[in-house]
Image: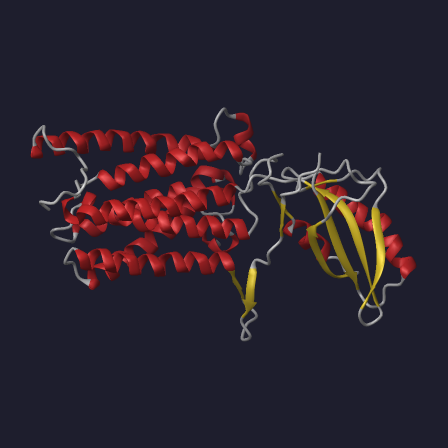
Length: 378
C-alpha cells in the first residue's frame, strides 16, 4: 500500500555564505543563536516582573552560554565517543562540525547556575533554576528544529501517515559528482508500474551542459545505480534500492538545450523524532511560563524545575524508542544512551517534587494545596 501523506524533506543547511570569506551561515547555528537571544528577552521579562535588574540577566546569560556550549560538547565527547576523542583530542574543539549532547548541556547549565547563584544574594539556586528551565525548554525547541533542518538524529522507519523521507543526504551525495549540475528530490505520484513502492520519490538530476543523451544514459545505468545502491546500504538508509533491478527514469530537455533525468526511486519514511521533541518542548515552555506567571515569587522553589525534569526527560525517554541510535555501541545495550541518561534526571525530578510538596505543606498547613486556582481574595 502506498502512503499518500509522507513528506520528502530536503532543505539546504546553508542560508547564505559571507561574501568576505565564503563562510556559510547555517540554519542550525542561527536557531541556536536565536534560542539565546529570545530566551534572554523572556528572562528580562521574568526578572523585571520580580524586581530584579537587567544586569543580573546579562550576567546570567553569559554564564548560560558558556556553560551550555561546554557542557553539551563535553557531554557528547564523554557519553558517545570518549575513545575517539581521546585519540584525537583537538577534535573536541571543533564544535562547528556538530556533536552536542542535550544531557551534557543540562549538566553544564546546572553547574553554571550554581556558580552564578553563589555570587548573587537573594537569588537562591532553586529560585534561579526554576526560571532558567523555562527558557531552556524554549531553547530545546529551537535546537531540535535545527536538527530537523539538518536531517540529523532521525527517527526509525514508519508506515504511519506522518513519515518523512529525508532526502538531503541523497541530493548531497549526487551533487558532488562531476557530471551533475544539480539534484532535487520531491514526492512522486506512483506510476502504474511502481505500485509496490511505499513512498515513491522523484529524483530530478540536471546534467552539465556537455552531457549528451548517450552519456546521460550510461551515467544513469552505471554511476547513478552504484550511488543509489551505496546509499541504500548505509546504517540509516533513506531509500530502498537494489542495483540488480531496472532503473525507472526518463530524459527530458531543460532550458538552454541542457538535459535532465527524472528518476523514480523508493524512499523510506521515518519518524520525524526531532519534531516530536521540538513541539513538546515548545508546549512545555508555555506551560512552565504560565505556571510561573500565576504566582511568580510565591511559586514554591523547585516546583518548576522538578516538573521540567519529569516532563522533558520523561518524554525524551519515550521518544528514544522512535529514534535511530546515534552510536553503534548502543545497538548492544537494552536502552540507548539517551534513555540511560534520562532516568536519573527523571528520578531527581520526582524526588524534588515530593520534597517541595512536603516543605510547602509544612509552611502553609494542611488546608493549602501546592498550586490552587485564583480566587476573589487574591
